[in-house]
Image 1 (tube, chains in turn blue, brown):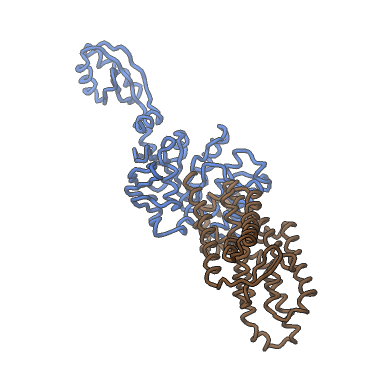
Image 2: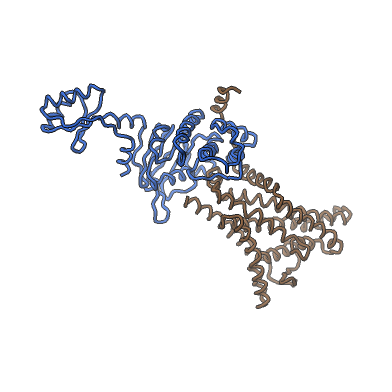
Length: 299
Length: 288
């Protein structure tokens, strides 16, 4: 969907991207990173709003540099910040954005209503944007990004500033609408939960460099299901006893992490301790959240 | 329509999208139509048309040089011209066009569409050009039509005065582009419609006042080149093949500055203002 090669972007003395190379797969992809990681810069380079200092970027199989702004007809973009004209109604604004994407007026009006109805805007869509709540403003921002039926939708912090209920609704809507419309999604966020809920893949960037590309499902599977064990000496004998019972383990500071294979794992650990003569000091089921991994990666 | 059919329509949707030229034209036209719904815009255009009618009734019957009537129309209020109305129109409309998109930040959404910064500027410029054509070019064509009817609808008159007719259109565009670019630059640089309108007024009238004062002091006609209004006057006289006249504190006198310098300076004003707007937009994207 997006392929960046040795992408460098400098703003004066500040290096926003320092040789980022990444192949963003098709589907729903989360772009994770702390503030200042280079996420927004990467998005603007993918949209062709900036030119890279060096390196190249291809979006939907076309070079951003050679395809020019017409490539943006295939992309929908929802920025993070508030950027809605309060003087217009929701419908008027989305129709205007559809026409600025190149749609004819009648088609723009029809499609605007379809998208806003899917977003459950109801009769509110005829009210001026100045009267909208935060959640409705986010919906209108999303609608303008979807209205022209883009192949790729780039969402920059779409749940920013929303209350928990509105956030849940927004995530569900993003998932449903992009599934229905067969759109690819690049979701830039620093909220891990959003990625878990919406995305198939996750890309972690930090300090302008790629840190990780992984499938969310396999990542979550690998993160969970550990039993943290503390034993006395002889520790080596205990580890061998674990291996004999086909249990994987790894050192984790003073403790051991043993893979969890169901409730029988506890019995197997106790048996290994008995067999090796190592006193079992502590045994606790531990799950490592995506957040732990994220913090490890961006450190 | 059942929910399943609505879902199916959504799923199968493929938009038919026009090219950039269509988008730019559409943006310009929609904004033009929106501005025409403003009572202030209609009032200023109405005043320009009324002024034209007065000029046609009072001055035209005594005017022996057909092209001079057009120069008069573009002149100051006291000579029967509509310059003040044109400046007002640019201030009211041009002042708000870009500043409004900047203040509500919708500019970021426009620039994420299939438009370059130059396309965006052209779309906004087109809106103002259409307004100026309505306010200035149509009255000028009306004056030309009156002259033609006075000449007995003779086709020969049109042939004899074809350069005058071309100059009427050309000068109309020149004035429109100059005022539009200046107003858009003020709009982009200030980011607030009120400041932009005031800034535009100052940009147009303050240098004019200064160079006239300067001329009164040093009596060097080259100082007049530093005022956009005087530059436009000089270029206009050249286009209509009339002797160059400048006006200082209401007194008109002939000047000899040639055609090259005023034309080049006006081109420089265009380039500088267009660059200022595009640089401002570029800077905006970097800081967001």
